[in-house]
Length: 431
Ligand code: SF4
Image (cartoon, rainbow, N blue to C red; front, top):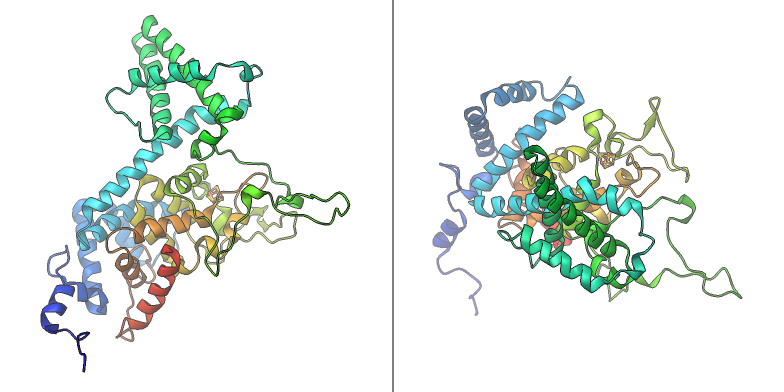
């Protein structure tokens, strides 16, 4: 009989699996024990107190009140401040501080792209439309000038592998040089910076609008602009048979071809989801986060022109708050924020619903693609070492959830059933 699948040394194997965590006195198996989770929660709170006593005092009051009776903005601000502490603590649990920090740095670095977009590109280039004489521009000459400018401005930090980041960094460097020249009252520096700004402006216009450069700029998130919404034509179609105008089809570039039963949707890249995060205007700060609370006028929930009731996320997920954390690169904190109201977010995301997106404050133009952001946040965490274990832990312990930070009942003796559910959903997300 072949018994090779049985371990020859189960005791040693179990010890390897039950490794010591990055929090002294805890091992992996403790994460599935209710009492040990309560102790872990207590260590987190002690560390928060040591790191930031003022924040800890406010947080402890919030925990004591189970989050009840709090003004929504005060609660959101408190959770946004606590979430980065939680992210770092969870990273330490699994000894992945370096990977967590690297991910954060990558997100913050990519944020420079959207800083340039917001500060200059959107208003000064994209909103202006194509310049009248653009088709007569000498593109080779223009690119040569742009490359010379990049060499001058980014000599210390080349981004040759990443043209999008390179453009943004060069643009921001010029804006900073303009500011410096003005404060130092230096006419020569000012003239140079103005000349460089004119060059980068022209090159950006060419990338945005010139037909010969469309293929180069199409994949770049920098040049994405919202479209006006036409509710009677939300899905673009072509009527290709004049004899039979009822026949229609989708434009070729947006068609998705099915291969067996594989999913056909293209998920957004990390940078594309970040572009959506920067497009968001974080409405919780004004209590206007209609994506979560519903789109209201004079207190009344509204309908859109298709008669769809705009009541926002059915779970009241803290969307705007999660976007703030994702923008800061606090990805574990952002996931914990989502999981306060939606612990099974691995089963929702961009493939399931878009009630939030329909209720976004942008009713006349492309809304923020919240479901793709949610999927992106979860995928970022799942792609970390121990990503699944982090997600699984947050379903059992989430100190941002003041009313139920962990399961107080003793009923959850076995984590097997929740783990099976979570693993099924997560495998659907990572494919
Ligand atoms: S997703 Fe839309 S409604 Fe929600 S916070 Fe962002 S901009 Fe506002």
